[in-house]
Image 1: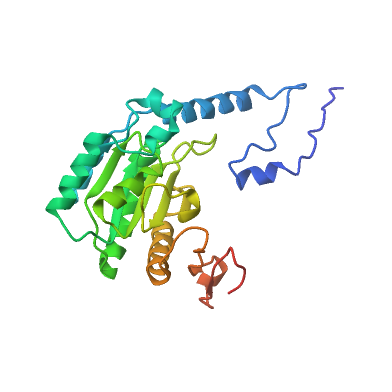
Image 2 (image 1 turned 135 degrees about the horizontal axis):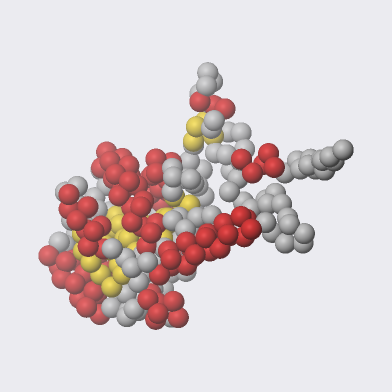
Length: 272
């Protein structure tokens, strides 16, 4: 008589439908199954590719131009990708040619602006390529309705978050928002981060910035990210600050509240 070995019940299997985390992968002897190992290697390769993918600034500038949006191309003090990865400090400052270009732009457009939008490749140009235009479409529509003025979109090759401080200071902007490719994870090679700073100037630390992370189709939606950023902008102007002293208390519609009650609140703060 043929004997069948029963498959052991694994309560973790149901959770695999709820998260991209690598759980309930199973095993073959003391090792991972071949399929799970190949999936891991594929995800690792995607993350490495995202870090080294060249910034298609020409394509992004054309897309902005098609939307009637001006842009300026700048470069950090890091000369190439290798130096950018080895010297984070150089990615935080502009090349002298870019400094001069911004000074000339500021002289031709005196008076400053409310907001400078800076886009940098960061550690994932893939994220910038995929999500910059869809996010800006949602954000700038709402920002224009609020009456915010902005400079041309500033594209920075080999840029890190703090380079936006120098850009904002040179332009005389009240606020900056940096759109940058975040460090790729094994399930998120295309995560876009937003870093908001009030009264930007060279030398500020991360304590003076607010971060909105994981903007992508599988993470925080473009609309929700725009809603949170606009809240931070309004509160920053009212309170004259940003960073650790400015909390994100924007009201959002929860899944449960979009039914008959219409209740709103911040999921980070509990019922509100």
